Length: 327
Ligand code: ASP
Image (tube, rainbow, N blue to C red; front, side):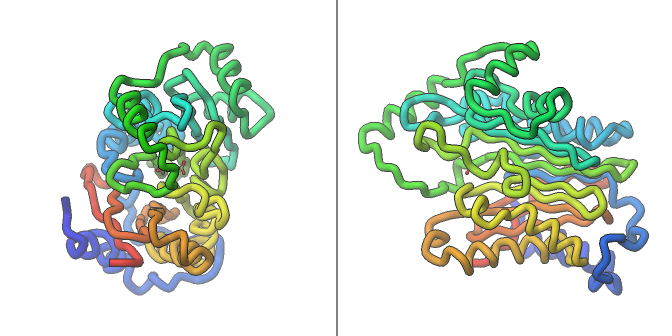
């Protein structure tokens, strides 16, 4: 794992140096030509999801579309039984049901989402079908499941033995404490810009472990867990969804980039907003953002230390530790 210091050197100050003189940028939605024409394609994902950024890069390096890249990336942890926060193997709710939330957004501003969906592994792909094949943005619960089955997605049991055992153990105390354990949370938010500078993003999760049945977090909500504006950039996040929902975090990051902020600074604004509005809740809760802009620059920031992220750019797949408000 990279040290925080090397993260700062490698990512933030590296990006700063590469663009020095343009760091201030004018407040306009039209960006200047990029300082670094090799800055794209680029893909960034929450947590150490390097396998996901690698799958996305396979699409991007061949000139593929960012939408296909983020979907391919998000499908990796969805299929991984060892990832206990996403798709197959995700920890269940307090009643023992694995329920999934996911969304996707393309370069045209189209969006699709599924919430509270059971029995279908690849929630991100169902979200894409919602976007492409229905007039709606969000389909929820049994409706999402039925839609997925109609679309040919297989019905599968998502509860692994490992997840069931964790649930059985949790039931001994049934302590419902919505604390994000940052070590165990691998919800993936992934955003990318392809060779043609098309920006897209996706987010997929099984949500908070042992949540109330029916609880939906930020991850499938456009503007909260994910937001894309092809003129500006994209942001996605992980962490305690309730805090992100109440501040519309990813939208805020993109709006700050629209004003000209570097993705790193924009992510810092959204984290600061959460801290200012919810000073008590944040003591035990983690939130982390990742963001890219139209210049191919990237940034990440979290409330507490321990949030890392994967970024694939210029043929190099890195895992970096994000800066954080508290040390
Ligand atoms: N944001 C997700 C949720 O609240 C959880 C996570 O990212 O760990 O559902």
